[in-house]
Image (cartoon, rainbow over all chains, first blue to last red; front, side, top):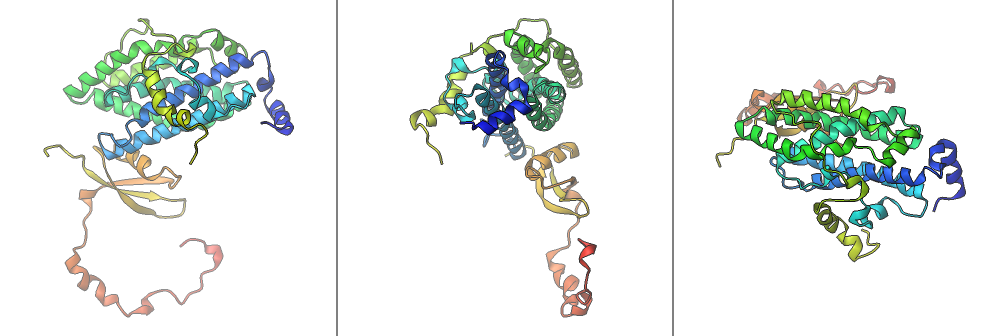
Amino acid sequence: MPDVETTVDVAANDPIMTDAALRPAFFEWLCRLGDNALILGHRTSEWCGHGPVLEEDIALANTALDLIGHTQMWLGLAGELEGEGRDADTLAYLRDAMKFRNILLVELPKGDMAVTMMREFLFDAYHHLLLTWLSSNSSSPRVAEIAAKAVKEVSYHLDRASDIVVRLGDGTAESHRRMQDALELLWPYTGEMFKADEVDERLSDAGVAPDLAQLRGAWETKVRDILEEATLTMPDPAGYAHLGGKQGRHTEHLGFILAEMQFLQRAYPGASW
Amino acid sequence: MSKKEWPLWEVFIRGQHGLNHRHVGSLHAPDAEMAINHARDVYTRRREGVSIWVVPSREITASSPSEKGPLFDPAESKTYRHPTFFDIPDEVGKM
């Protein structure tokens, strides 16, 4: 429970945190950031011990850990904002699928390395733009602070993923084919990143978050450059987009992730070691 | 197995400014750029370094174990070759 002193500090340092009218949308939005990192982190961690080579295995595990670290900060802030005693662990382990706010892209199965790295690249390119904006422009100092910490790690994720997309795309006939297949599989799930709903608009109006439509141009430029270098064919950006994750309408895959991730806390509530 | 292995690289990391690069281990990578990335992931997760060198292992020429005697024995029992008779002021720092 926050004591009086903490509450005063929060108010003094971040007026956005005490804006009661904004709170429900702000909470939703923080869950989106936290859940994207959590679910992608979990998917990435599925490679642990199964990577194609030891060095890539370790790199993927590092990426997963970075993302879980971001989750802790975003969901921690969400819980603090909500003020009902839920912390990051409670939000991660005790919400059902319908309460998760991640985009569909991050919950799709990890597939082969082509799917894993192409997804990471498509998401990182967006994630990096978003965090960069938040770290220097967000009207919420608490949000800017978390973004500034996370963006350092995400810069590296983006560099590494871009490098691998180019190597595999412009690699052998087999790696090229797999990368192009992965790109076409994942592409219809990228539109959700930039499709603003009422929550996004409220946060953008309050200066906490960017106008998502404005990020899209920079994302397309980055993605086009890398795909071109990788000799891959970029699908139509105006094509069909699967939506719903941000509002809690998920694919069947999310339930399986949660079953695995939440089993222990559900079966043995409060267990710790 | 006929699987083609990536070449081996030796990794050297400078722990902090003013120190030398030290050998920390080796790893596999298809080229130097990826070797640096792998070294970052495998060896510098805990802020161990400020600079990384990678060197193809095949470029290293090692002394042969059988030459150990001729190479190193003559220096034995010549303690006067160690500069242990000087006091180094603390201000000098790492040497």
